[in-house]
Image 1 (cartoon, rainbow, N blue to C red):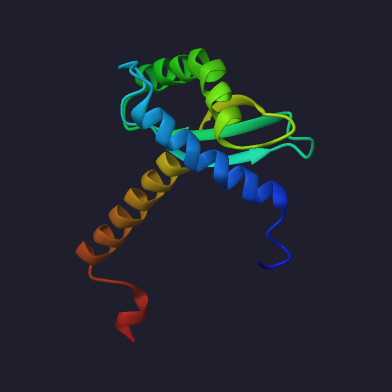
Image 2: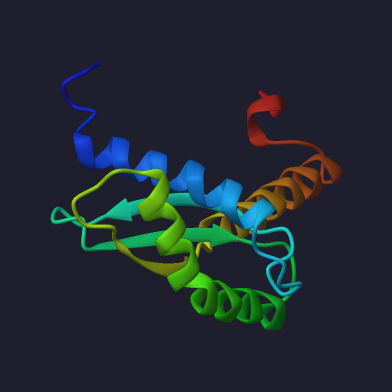
Length: 128
C-alpha cells in the first residue's frame, strides 16, 4: 500500500462504504431518497467525521434529506461501531456537497458558450 494513503484515509473510505450500504438498506425515511455519498473526512483523533452527500432535487428536498440524515446519525454511528473496529467511533456530521451541482452548472455554461460561438461562425482560430 502506498505510503501517502494514510490510515485516516482508509478509515474514511471504509466508513463511506459502510454508510452507503446502511443508508441504502436500513434507512426507511422517504426524505433520504436517492442520496449519494461523495466523501468522508475524519478528524485525526477519529472523534468526528464529515460525511458529504449529494441529492438530485431542489433546495427543500436537500434540506429535508440533511435533517433526516442528522436524525439517523446516532443509529448509523452505532452500526458503524459494530461493523468497523475502532477505538472511537466518530460522530457523524452530514454536509450537502455542492461541488457536483456546481460542476453541472459550469458544464452547462461551457456548452452554451461553445454552441453560441459555433452559431456565430466559430472561433477566431478557424478564421486564419
